Amino acid sequence: MTYRILIDCDPGIDDACALSCALTDPEISLELITTVAGNVAVDKTTKNALRLVEFFNKDVPVAAGARKPLLKQLEDASEVHGESGIDGYDFGEPSIKPFSDDAVSILKDKLLHSNVPLTIIATGSFTNLGLLLSLYPEVKPKIKEFILMGGSLAQGNMTSVAEFNVFTDPHAARIVFSSGIKTTMIGLDCTLSGRISDETKDKIKLLGKAGNMLASIIERDIDHDETGTAIHDLQTIFYLLHPERFTDKKFWVDVVCEGPAIGATVADIRKAYHDKTNVNVCLDVDTDAFNKWFLEEVEKNMQ
Image (cartoon, rainbow, N blue to C red; front, side, top):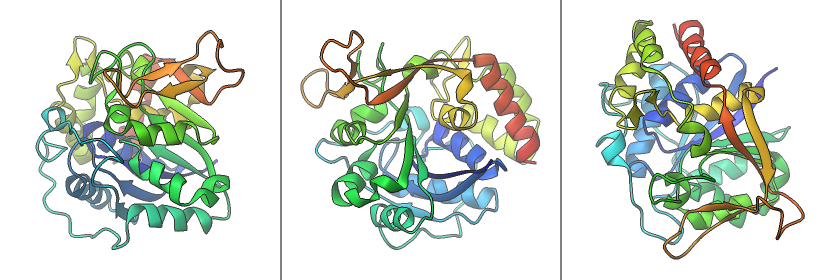
């Protein structure tokens, strides 16, 4: 089975790990990469996407998207990902260029001209997707599903309740969550517990040029504890290929767009206010299987 996908991202260390697997796994047909401001400015996230496409010698188009959230001010995460977004490895300047058109227009055209609905994986703020759904609602039947890294039911990493990607553009996240399109949310409930262990990272470092690159950027990620490094976005690709390794449950999820809880994703866990659901929320992941899979991805597909 071949999974035909589009990735909207803000590389970013963890986005870079996800893109590396999506670019090289033989079961995945990555047809477009769009970038957005988030971890760092969009000029940098676009450059990083181009660097990875060139690193793996793939012919995947890249289009630059939104420079800022729909309504709120951008707060980046360069303190986590470094000034470039993927500090720790010298990629050099990419020789390939992005599309001249904007990401939202390219996404619209790609979807409308596809002969089958496509899966969109989003690992950054959801600004491009919010604009896409608002400006071109006719694309909805061409979106098979959204697989999103973002949100949390238990805790935040920007505030006590808000996860970074949703916090960055909560108004866009609300548009995506209320779109009626099948949506899976892989948030901090999974990604903070399902980490890439230091043992896995050290093994990957020995696996050629790609392994050294991935280990080098992971080592620069400060989201690390005694169990390993939280490579949040990588779990979207793992879910695409192995959803059975996740514990999930469907809820109605709202996004808070103002006040001190801005960016919070609030689930109606008692079904007290909604008689239907809009998001499949991943609550846990098989961490051992996740680590084993990532090691095999590098060993088998990136050499």
